[in-house]
Image (tube, rainbow, N blue to C red; front, side):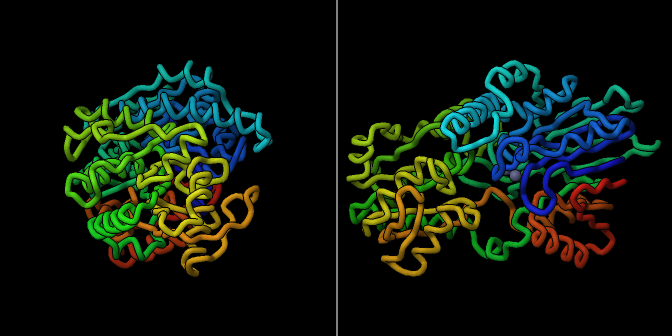
Length: 465
Ligand SMILES: [Zn+2]
Ligand SMILES: [Zn+2]
């Protein structure tokens, strides 16, 4: 079996891996690099075209985050015969997210904030989405290819990362031998507020393709979700109690809905008053509808819970409406999670941070140098420190509370090690993580499971597994 990573290998980048099993080509994820634009955001599909015996029969999308889904329209364009497989929920989310991505690319070019031509338009996306095949969890489906002489099957397992997320088991006959490969995608082994933790097979595999996102994050293994939930509840109560407004910048898929569920819990337990208005906006609202529509057909902690069962208002579009909303105690759950310029969360933060009664609470990953990370850094220096959220606005003073809470949808590194124990692979291939993260994973797997061969693929490397 041949394996090659087509996205960046030293950072998170675009998730897209290629395997060739007995003549059948399978792409694992079709992501785009969220930090790049245009062609440079895409995985290196040219490497497949460059090899005469490489081709793509199937593509499997593990979940609807951009770094796993964003280049799917290009994959379909370049390999028109590809069979695309995903969960039913991911398919519904993709039907919202891919057209939104097309519109965003067009808008950025029209505004002049990007010089890249849009990679695809809404029509491209809509004309191929009906071709996507969805499969239930823990049900085998066919992955045989045109060139393959033997049967290959896939089976999805719940990954507990975000609605519709999955890991995939591929079973095949390779060189006359029965083999199995498990690809984790992004993995959350513990329950969140809406979705339960992953349910991966207790089965020995030959090859484990393992995500390593939090491999360099020692802090993650020392905080518990319960203590973070308690801390966030207390901080919300404090700011709202003194009449302040709280901004919680969120990612539209996953963290946003989980936060609404948590706020509902705070209200029902009397931690915050049930009349405190909660504002939501944009894409997140459309994605929340998919959460509700799929609540009986996807894994849930409580299938009675509906995101729209929690009272929420649409964030006013007009400046005056927005000003009114920020005049009184309330919670604003809006994107982007990292508060990039030209996003609503950035604009709202500009209006809130000068007043010490307000709060900005960060609940997701904020990459270094993002406005969210800069704001936190400034506030850590003390009240009255300076920050630039948007160069057009210039330097501002931070007087409000800025706090960070850990609610990752990824498992911390020691939990990922337990997966190695559970699946007892002969080989582990580390993917989806920065160099330091993979180093920690490789060292520790080597220490605890010396019989396992650990491979950290270098950029452009083709592995024979
Ligand atoms: Zn993800
Ligand atoms: Zn990811």
